[in-house]
Length: 273
Ligand code: SAM
Image (tube, rainbow, N blue to C red):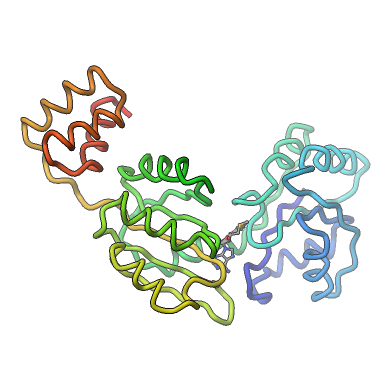
């Protein structure tokens, strides 16, 4: 089974190998058959399609395994970009490989990598987060858990939530970290802007167009931590002996007046996490 990356906006971004492969297979498994049909029609490729989305991935994967067993050649695509990256595909790939068939990736467009390539951040490491949870509580917890990781963070976000998410990033991460907003990549209104995280809410609010379209948000790695004084360390260690990491960091911040994020990061270190 060929796992084929397709454009994230600009139709010209399909690779020669992807086209050659799509011309040579018997069937395309795709997230949305109408969407795939548009891409195939654009290149004059006539092929049967099989819907494979998050609600039917297991059954569709079983069908794919059956078809491969009959000797059919199959390609897997998603609506945009690389299948399996914040998109269905992983379960089908696992099932196909478990059944003893080869899975062949055809690399190509991916919004996260495109954003990183133009972000210009000095960080040598990044963590791909994808979409944060939609519920506020779970989202805040997720951001807190990411705060201390020594890597740039890459998020996908929907336009109706971008303001809210950015406000939470400002609140829960160091406001001096750089935010790169990569919007509508490869499309007509592509925009890539860098700013200190603290300035991002005002930047987004300044023009309604800045809140439209598809977004990748990249946040630079945390600034180097100042060494913690001995008293703060002592308080944190004492609290950690009795409490979970999050509560210990919160209380230690209240007692010592030190930033909660730094204490949380240090608490994780002390716990060996
Ligand atoms: N599989 C895709 C990939 O490889 O990037 C991602 C699919 S995910 C369902 C869709 C999300 O990816 C969007 O909500 C947005 O966050 C991001 N995205 C996709 N295309 C984009 C684009 N052209 N510009 C900016 N972000 C994009």
